[in-house]
Length: 275
Image 1 (cartoon, rainbow, N blue to C red):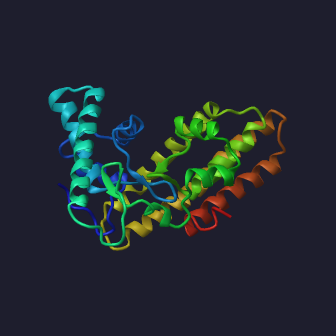
Image 2: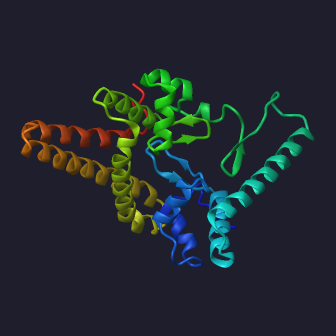
Image 3: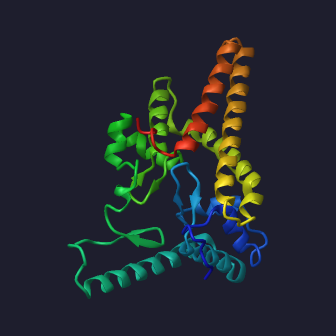
């Protein structure tokens, strides 16, 4: 089992570094594919970055070893993981019922590979329950389910980050123009590609392992994200302007506003995202 850094989690670039010696073909795309298939469920930071625990890393090793050494299909690997999760859940339940709880009765619930107390995620700043997200964004249960199905909204345990509120509100606004959740898959795919590019740019910084490496990588990623959003907005606005559907000056201003908004969210985290 690998040793985690002092902050308690690993970024995706650090996971690649841990696994590459045993699995040279491992890649960001491979990890994301396994996540899409539901075999791993890493937590997410407020800004959307994946946070892998030691349990997530061990789970990845199990999956990759089963594929490489036993040539098992994902369906079989998923069944084996489900059985292991059930056994872990039973063991945790037995351990809990064997001794009285320290601070009142509570039940433990499974979250990915580990267990946490109910309400633990609710105590995190800015997270939203399903009901709170529906009420704050003004969306229906059906639309929320579709957004989750097409990968536009993700939960951490039973809660959503504040960024999910912005996604949900935008999706609701777009429905007025006839846009459905399935139409937004292209937007999600573009965001995934842009995120992959940014993560690859900051990977050398993370490998330095210095005291300020994580903070520098975060700032660099935020600056890159702001520029990418500005470029993206300018390209879309310019294309619409060429088609006679937008004013070039307005397109440039909109792109600039997007970049500023992205940089502010990076600087202030999820504070203000729920305003």
